[in-house]
Image (cartoon, rainbow, N blue to C red):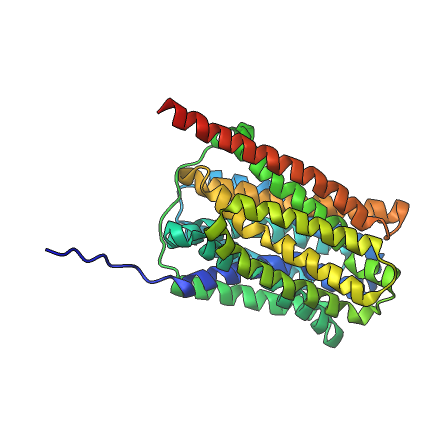
Length: 399
């Protein structure tokens, strides 16, 4: 008797709804970069201080992401995700009502705490919705939300900032966050709780070479990017003479090519393996940093450099998440939470470095600093690959 194998349909709409939550996290975290001049004028603070609004979001996220996994490990993952989206909407409303830089600073910290409950859950749920041979594609769709935040969310925030107050932009983002929560509740049928997680599991993940070096790679890669990106508006204005109201074109170019990179990354990772794709992305990202530092004040070449930087920078994350998700599938949500924490800690540290370097040495050297940090990232990544392959060989030898 012939046995029929019934294949489950690819859960596209469930993955897209999860991607919308990633979109909200990305847009909320980066919207202040798009609204740098408006917030600076509205609250009477220097533009360089806006980098610290990115820092506090990222730092709160980095601290809260692994702790959320421990505190709420017995809860259904979708409940944690939707609670995070509700708190994110509340934090955006608080930000819109801010009457001082300090109040906005606090609301940004709350946004970071709420986002810490969103990103790891999106990745953990998404990784489990697709079969192993399509996991790279699935992770690419989920993480595409962050790249679309660059191509749509951040530039649209910048454009809306020219039409209305930055406070109204925050209120619109709160509405989108609530819409994302509704879509997830409708399309995503996963109601499972993750494996029990304790603080000892966090310690173990951070002390094992194969997991700690993998997470460290994400941290240093994002640090490298944000050494320049955190102050991309004044950098482009200073070096290339770009008018302040045209920064939206830079963000669109960055986001559009980032989306293209992310689209190809998932399928390339399924075909060639995540390690090879990640290595190529690091080389390409370094090429973009070097080019934008080395060229003269040619705006067209600057756009080419930014597109190279964005394409390879965004290609990194889907294969990296796929790689980390398979280090220890049972503790997948914890490792992805640590990876997300590393990502936002890298944003925080990179933004701080960006502010420090720009104040002491000017905007021109920012890409060179990014390139130096990226070199360290490449060394760490290669060490991580070597450690994982050695463990695999030892395991095969023991058999």
